[in-house]
Length: 162
Image 1 (cartoon, rainbow, N blue to C red):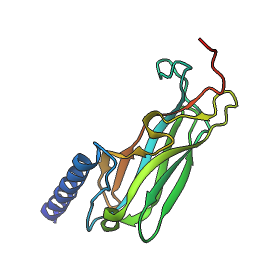
Image 2 (image 1 turned 90 degrees about the vertical axis):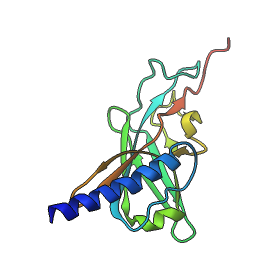
Image 3 (image 1 turned 90 degrees about the horizontal axis):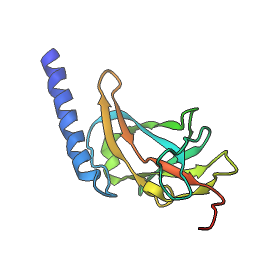
Image 4 (image 1 turned 180 degrees about the horizontal axis):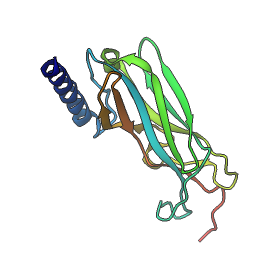
């Protein structure tokens, strides 16, 4: 029985590795077939500086990010708020990953609670869509595939003119 579990885990790992290699370089669908798993997306939201860098940028607590998956059958859109450290973790509804081959999923910035830093920035695709990159697979009775995005950033509403 343990051998069968190891073989199944290895097969899942290989399929996800192939999907990661084919998807991490661009905006391509995640072609996973026949597996059942939970999927989650994580990332961090910052307030970038006026010089458009993240060097020393503070994270934004309470910012809202959205994961959207487009498909011909059932479009999916799930929002999540960042914690006190600007980190968000958005679990997606349980999906049969075989249907993911028709999905193209991206993360977007939605809103910032900081009035001085609430201009949406396209850093890492915050406006146009940040592609998902496979970060880890947590096996078990209910496996979870965790994808990472970003970092995403809002921009200050006003910057001094140079």
